[in-house]
Image (cartoon, rainbow, N blue to C red; front, side, top):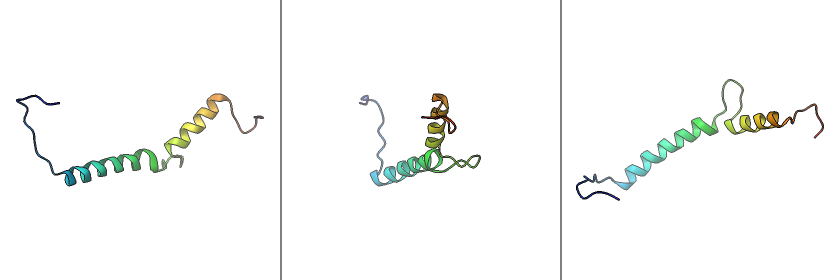
Length: 63
């Protein structure tokens, strides 16, 4: 866990949770929740469409 000579810094749990949550929430908003301005797609939708294209699942073919 920690070495005997390691210095421990006390931290208030409320402050740490606030800072950590805000950092996580912002990364989720930027990385997953907001659509891209270039095409209007969220990353998950872009991955789905790319996988469908890779599998040859196109709108003009029978499934």
